[in-house]
Image (cartoon, rainbow, N blue to C red; front, side, top):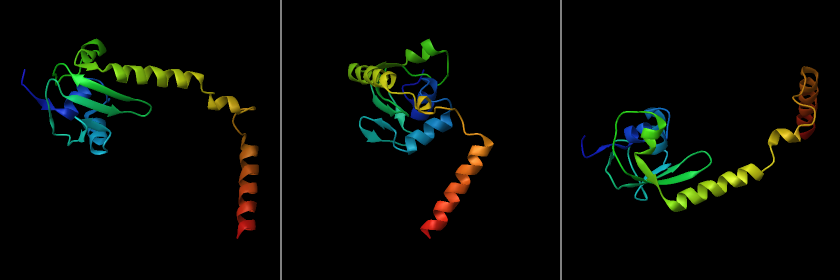
Length: 133
């Protein structure tokens, strides 16, 4: 195996993203940092690099433990990195906060609006717009 690998390919192989394209978009969007710096998708990853990956709900900080350009099963992918203790702690705390938060669907008493309800809402919205002008 070579000594380095493109970061977009490594992130895909380590199962942080479903496709290399999504990994590339995250890198270009600044949601992936290597050593605290923004990088390009072609940046070479080496064993020992510290990578911060911000997802939709959590941020993970990992150290590269192994390189692989092949996407394998989850246990193999998890062997490619070691998550830092602080990252694990933050992820568990965020998960606990989400578990305690109220489900947004619980606020809806009678379910989705019916077709009749949507028409009524539309009429009210139109009337409000006309009154504002």
